Length: 166
Image (cartoon, rainbow, N blue to C red; front, side):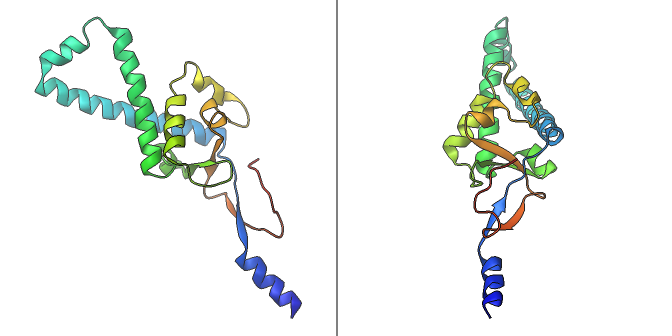
């Protein structure tokens, strides 16, 4: 009887084991997200050129630094909004089956999404993802991980009370 109660308790009380996404998936996330961002910018620019070519010409006339700075800010906003609306996902993460979560496995909130988004525009931030395991600054500074959803599974709390991603 006691053994049967333990089995039922084990089935009911569970926690998630978080498995970090590997470097290949993280790189694929970046490439996919960046291509989607570039397509979005190209589409918006095309509409802008077609509707107001003179204002687009003035904006892009000799002010390369300002134009690039605006592009970085828009990229940070794009990534923040994507992760906020999709609860830690982006087009790349959706395709690769990954998700950004807090260190404890909970969903990221609006503040964390925006901090992650704007952390990405720090110069050389992309190079921080080259380590193994992949733990770029936008994760480290905001206490988040990108997990592989399919590999992350439920584990009994009785077997593992406390688990940090490997």
